[in-house]
Amino acid sequence: MVGAANGGAASTSTDRCPPPAKEQGWLGEIATIEASLAATEQKTTVMRDVAARHTTVHLGMPDFRSSAGRLDPEL
Image 1 (cartoon, rainbow, N blue to C red):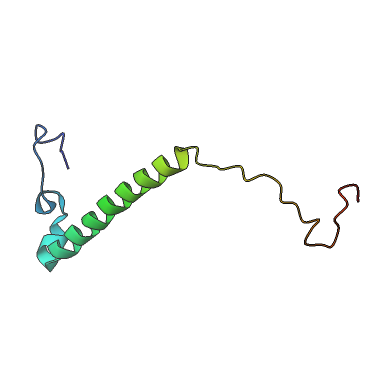
Image 2: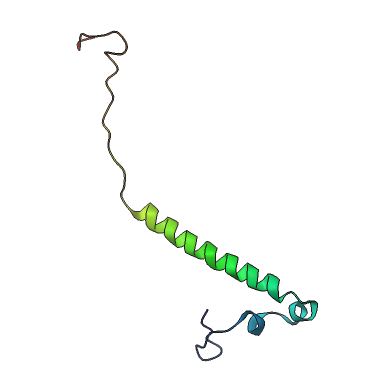
């Protein structure tokens, strides 16, 4: 992540974590949550890209007359 407060340099989890997290030794949990958040943001981006594509395929209307025992197209 790029931090605006520190001149655009990348900041680490320990730079941004609240003091109680440091005191309680929760730095690993914070790093895990940040990794999960980053993965979620990436997955959301991929899902939006896929949804934006026009991948619908028109298969037409099926004709069930022959399987229903109707061979005359007028029925």
